[in-house]
Length: 149
Image (cartoon, rainbow, N blue to C red; front, side, top):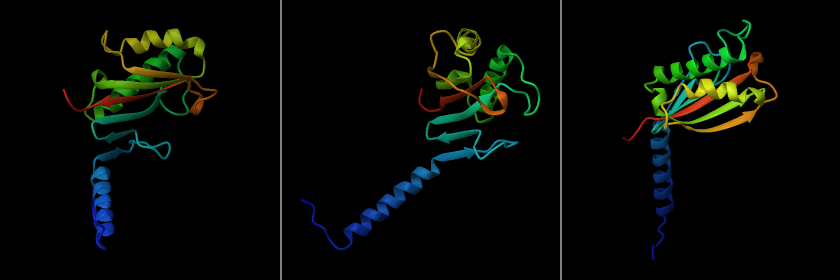
């Protein structure tokens, strides 16, 4: 049985604070070069690098390319964010995809699949979105595993 002393709660609190400081130090935030809002383009949390959702647009305010062009640009943008922070598409283990038209899923899959090696497809969630920022047709976010093997 552990006996409580008057200092035990203080020691526990100090250990929790020290643990929190260690955890906070293990997270790195990478703001975008040209921010369009309050977010990081990527966050490194332990062994994972999380790339924020990327749109398939060249610049905000320019006309959006056709869907297939947006899909390729979105995936290129994800790859560029990962590369800026030391990862490649080979490291991606999870993606979330938002589409404003699920009827375009097959076309998206053709492009998306070309960014990964056969047999090494990341886990994925695909959701329908009523609308996305600046009239985009899709958004892609990915997680890359940076540790281990």
